Amino acid sequence: MGLPLFLRVFLLSSSLSLLAFALLPDVDMWLLVKLLALSLGITLIIPVLYPHLRGVRKGDVVQAVNAPMRSFLPIPFLSAFSMGGQFISLDNGRIGSRIKVAMPDGSWREALVLSYSGLFNPARVRLLEAEHTIKIL
Image (cartoon, rainbow, N blue to C red):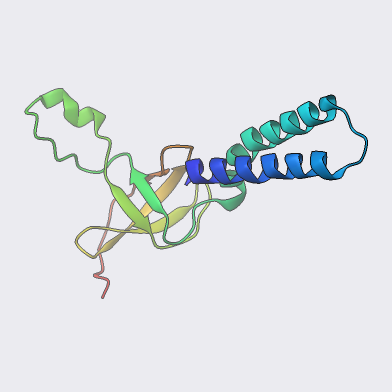
């Protein structure tokens, strides 16, 4: 999610800077440099702030950090470094809140939101122990 947002903000802010430079009468090249620097600053800040404003939404892909690892390598210590799997969020949530995530078998489990999505990675959650699971139809 982060990379497309980064590119959209960059294209929008750069095009607005170039339009402002083209439409304003009697301006020098330093205004263009300043406008492009402003658009670059906006481009770098928006993708950092946006996930914190948005949180985790229903339908987002989340990555579990403690899901069972299905490794093809028979190395015992790799189970301690399980990266987990990717699941679909069934609720909206913020850091520290509990949400439901859809499991591959059609059931759901509760998860604790650990972090929001970044530029290249989805939001991270920790799967909580399930007392029971319910199949989603």
